[in-house]
Structure formats: structure tokens, C-alpha cells
Amino acid sequence: MPVGIPIRPGTPLPPGIVLPLTRVDLDPSGQRGPEATHAAPTHTTPPPAPPRTDRRSRPLTTIPLPRRLLSVAALTAAALTLSGPTVARGATPSPLWPRGVDVASWQHPGGGPINWNAARASGLSFALIKATEGTAYTNPFFAADRAAATRAGLIVGAYHYARPTAAISTAVEQARRFIAVTGLTRTAGHLAPALDLEDNGGLDPAALAAWVHAFLEEVESETGRTPILYTYRSFWTDQMGDSHDFTKYPIWFAIYNNQATPGVLPGGWPNWALWQYTSGGTVPGIAGAVDVNVLCCTTTALAAQADGTRSEIQKWHAGAGLVALALGAPIGVENPAGGGGRWQQYSNGLVFWSVATGVHALWGPIAPRYLAVGGSNRFLHRPVSDIENTVAPGGQQARFQGGWIYWHPATGAHVVNGRILQTYLGLGGSGSALGLPTSDEYSVPGGRQSDFQHGRLRWDAVTNQVAQVPLG
Image (cartoon, rainbow, N blue to C red):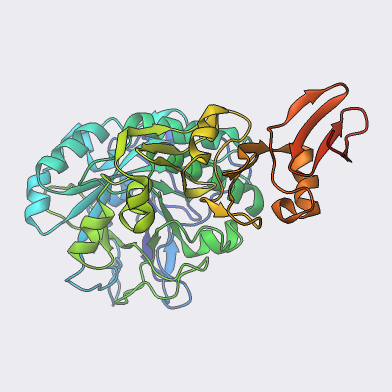
């Protein structure tokens, strides 16, 4: 997480400190810690300064310092003789808001443990623990910290420090490695997985946004939980172009503003989920300064954020009303869906969820027809609608990523896809003079064909054109 101490302009610095400084993670021995030695790429542009303060509201100069210097008595008052406070105490959020810390390996000087019982007794409610960084680094204290914090009665969470690269495949690779270390977190007492975004990897805003989308969607697809996104104002506005495309993800916002709230958020977020309000916290049981956070804004909200037991399908089902009753009881457990996401079978239908498509339910004759042609594992892929009424009276339809299925008691359930579907929809679909389909697509000499109540559509493989053909 961001590290640094705000220092007023003109302040004398301890011997040996030369400005400007760049952020590196150091272990207490003064050697580069694992967060630095395992960094994957070499940055083509220097990383932006961490968010010591909102520069527009606070007259302090932000100087990011190595963690080793922070551990030396926090740059003692003797070293910094100022008329006012030298180390920002952070903001003053409501004492009613649940408080927590985020920690990494540097909270273990000399390899010693954190006393999580003491931390819990001090009033903490949750802890976020660094799990991984890039493609190669795993925090060696992650598993023990998560287990001990859980035993102490804290709600726990895990975060991944992103190392973006030009190859967008590394986003998926890092996401999968993160999940391999943390697990699916599908139990009570676990916050959703979090992405710590502070490094642009030399990417421009558009490329960086695509990388971040790929990471978050992979995590969400695999875990069924909506990830949390950590950032700070200058990074988001400068390195992400103030993108408004991520508001579905709860924001963990870092700003040290000495205010009662984080203030207006970047990126179009209407509200915040977590607020890291200081990096200079003192917590019993944790050595040195530590990042302190609050969660918005009640213990009830914290419990809800930490409930990983209900999947997106289960949450949808709980509010689906009559549709849920029509689907009947679940059969077995949720399973991975082809192309990503999950699916659940019910006694009278199916429900599919993915990041790309959301939740959609199928029931009646269309559901078994969809399974019969391979479900999400084959050409139709995943549903993008629930069951709908057709323009033709008495019929039903469902739309999929790779085609449509139509059903009517007089015609049965049939699939229309590809160029034939495009032509059919262009003519008016089930409301056209062709009527409803009476067959799936099938092979004919030189192409493919589908039959309808009042005609046929034939696709020519040579011309890639579709023509109407009369029945008979």
C-alpha cells in the first residue's frame, strides 16, 4: 500500500536522505523486501507518488520514503523539528465506523508474528492482508496472518498488488495466481478479493483500463464475488484517465485529508466501500506504523460485505419472486459455465451467471433444448436474456451469445443462429411472414438451411449470402 510521510517545504531531513525519492519496499534489515525483489516488469515510466494527502486541500509536501526509514522511530521528532505536527495523523472518521488494518510482510520485522488478539482487543474489526504481487511473489506471512486474524475474531480479506504489463494475458495470469493462493473466499467472514492498483506498468490509460478489466473479470468469474478496487485520486485521474467504467466494483479509496469523510471520489463512484485514511496508525500487536481503514459505515454493512456464502445466482434467486417459484428447488450445486461464470440447475429450469452477461433464467421447453445442443459449452454459449414472449402469439424465445431458441406448442423448440438468424431478425423475426422456426439449422448442398412455418432460409457457403426459399 502507499507509504510516505508528509513533510512541510523547507523541513531539514535526516542525514543521507536525498530528494527526490522513489518508493521501494524494504525489509527491516535494509535489503530490498520481497515486494520489490519480485517485481515483474521494469517500468518505462516512474510510478506516481503515493497519496499522502489530497494536495488540493492540504498544504503539505508529500515525500514517499522507504519502509526502512519509517521503521526508525517514524523519523523521530528530534530529526524533524517543526512548529506543527510532522507526521500526518490521518483523517478523523466516525468512531462508529468499523475499523481495520491492511498489512504486508514488512509488518513482520525480523520475521516476528503479529499479535492479532491484541489488535482485535484494541477495537479493530477487520484486516486486509497482502497475498500476492505480480506473477511471482507470495507474501510468506499471508496464510499464517489470515488464520491468526480469523482466530482472533477479525473479518479478513486478501489483496493482490498489480503489476500491469503490455501483455493483457498477464492480468488473467496474475488473477489466477492470486486465487490459487487465497482460495475462492466463499465463506462467511471473508471480504471480497481486492486489487491494489498503484502501478501503471508503463501503459497508457486505455491499455491500463483493459488490463484492470481483465484482472477483475477473471477474479469475479472464478470466485463469483465482485472484487474490491484500491486506488487513490491522482493515480485514477492521471493513469486511468478518470475512467467511469469501474463503478460496479466497490472502491477502497486512499486519501489522508484530516477530514471526517474522503470527500468527492474520482471515476464516477457515488460512494466508497473502504477508506484508507492514514498510513501512520499505531495498533497494539503490530510493529511500527500501519495503514488504518474504515468500512462504510456500520457493522451490519461489514457483515454483508464479508458474506461470501451466497453466490450471484443465489442472491438473484432470493429476490426473483414468482420466477424463483417457477424454477423450483435447486438440483445439486453450482458448476462452472463454459466461457466463464457459473450455472445452477433447478427442478424446472436453469440459471446462468457470468460477468459479461449477468444472471439469466431459462425454464419450460427451451431449457432442455439448450442443454441438448451443448449448453454454454458449445456454439450458443451463455444466455443473455430470460425467457421472453415472441411477437407471434403463444410463443417463447430466449437469446444467447451465439443464437436464439424459439418455442411454440405447434412447432416445438428450435435453434436459429449465424447468418440465417441475422437475416431472420432483419425480416422481423417471429413476426415476419416466415413465422416461427420448425427446424434447427441443417446442412444442404453448398450451405446450411433452416425451415420456418411459411418458408426457408438458405445460407450459401460460397457467397455468404442468405436467400429465402419456398417450402415444397
